[in-house]
Amino acid sequence: MDLKGRVAIVTGAGGGIGRGIAIKFASLGANVVVADIKQEGARETISLVEKAGTKGLALNTDITSFTQVREMAGAALKTFGRIDILVNNAGWDKIEPFVKNSPELWDKVIAINLKGPIHCARAVLDHMMERKYGKIISISSDAGRVGSTGEAVYSACKGGIIAFTKTLARETARYQVNVNCVCPGATDTPLLAEITAGETGAKIIEAMVKAVPFRRLGKPEDIAGAVAFLASDEASFITGQTLSVSGGLTMC
Image 1 (cartoon, helix red, strand yellow):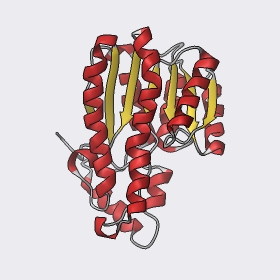
Image 2 (cartoon, rainbow, N blue to C red):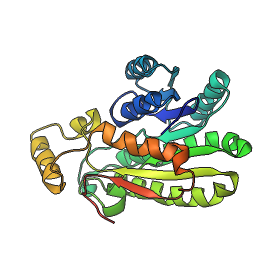
Image 3 (cartoon, rainbow, N blue to C red):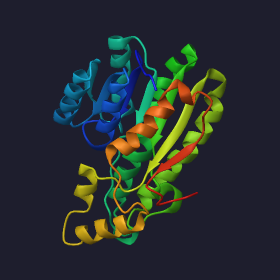
Image 4 (cartoon, rainbow, N blue to C red):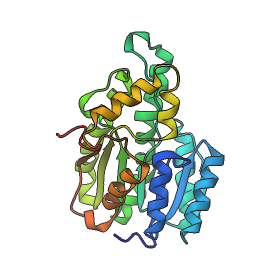
């Protein structure tokens, strides 16, 4: 795979899966825009990108704000002159039974996991359609394919991302824009550690590992390889697809 000279925006790349994707892209020659509200983590990711020999740009971006997202896309264009790839990676959740959720939690989960990727896609599409080139890869979740106990609204959002991906792929194919999504299973990230903290956390992780045929959690680099393939020209005839990267947790 070769991404030499490409410009990629990766949201939520200040750590975890997003950082793994950013580093993978840089290793393949891409310049990377890290859009994240966690600026210290974003700067750390940029330093790793630049160690790989490409250019990076950290932008403080709250993807729940369409205004901030448009400003982020504008800054990327001003710096690099083009946007070839968008990876909708930023996400957040809290594991809790649905009947214990608050409307405030629903709103936060929906704003980050569903509206955020919609904002980002809209902010880059005019540019991609005009150039007749673009790759949009959204990080959904196997929770959006088969459900996940304690993640009802999150699962709904991730299922929505899958449907959004398919429809957007149909609408933009005539402009040579590829739109796909990747569904990780449980992956060893700071977010997973955060949402499984507490007395029951170890039991949740143990159950997750037992459910995976490979008997381990995913790693950010596992997801990054699949995303890099979909971002490359080797996947130029692939669009509207959903790929699970979950160690066999789901086979559908």
